[in-house]
Image 1 (cartoon, rainbow, N blue to C red):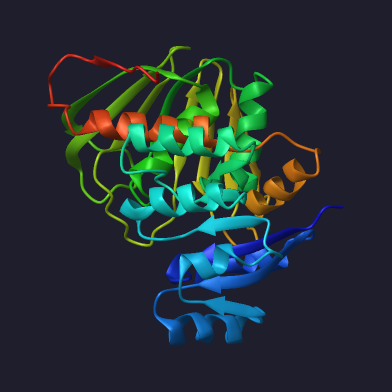
Image 2: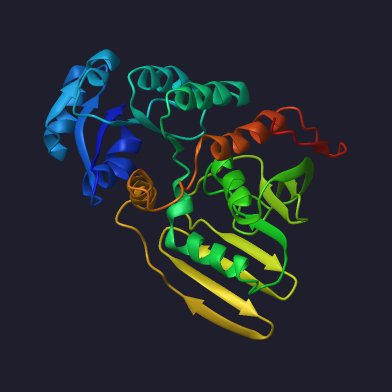
Length: 307
């Protein structure tokens, strides 16, 4: 097996709790170095996590010849430049979400990595959750018939929620917003609700705002003949209704939120699996995020153009 040897650009809270344990814990994955501009914080992370080397410049990390892949975990509006630098250094990339400042920035990332023949993955890590993979398998098997609605509460960022609509039901046709009752489990009874209709006719319904309360993350997927209620994405519980019959399943949680995503990255590097979320797929949520800024509640739907 080819080992993926990681360096991280950024080693703050996301790397501390979500990604780091996966980068050095998944079989075939090893974390060789971390970078943070505040030297003592980079050193502290490396010491506590058993990482051999630390740097306080991007150039220093990218000059580390052992590293063949870079995880970009800088603040949300600063992903593009580290990705460009990693691509120029010939390193594969896993970049945090949302992928870029806007869809055009995402396209430039895709082009820079593509021109060098490098992998570009986006950290929409819920695609690796056992509950989400199980729900996707049930949908693809026709267990609940064609999907009609996907209602998602507001316990996690809008970019992740949009990504799940893409993951479950494919590309979107149009989007609009209204002031109405929020999906169950949201922070309030009413608010501005985003509707995203897919080309297959499914409708994603979610609060525009992100109001995390540390309650369970939920997704309710209703089809023509049944329903899947992922009642706790992280803990790993879901209920499936087929006609009048309901069953409960508990695939369980992952050791760390990025675990499944990193496993997929390693498998892809070894030719065993398609990438869970490549740059082209990851950019789609940013296309809609750009659009959301121009939506006015009650206005007609706006077509979605991914090109």
